[in-house]
Image (tube, rainbow, N blue to C red):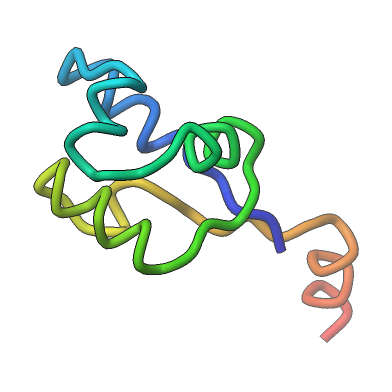
Length: 77
């Protein structure tokens, strides 16, 4: 299952928050920003830091996206 941070990216645009500003507010590194951009998993403590900085919940910034193979298994049940 993949993870998507598109919600976070949209929230940042809506609130006019740059990557640098998010890094400062959430005390996260540029490496975490890269992981977010490329859809890689980040540690829960980083998700928590981002949520606290953005005044939101994890549900507001990320979603899990099943891959095609998982969807086929679900359809066959």
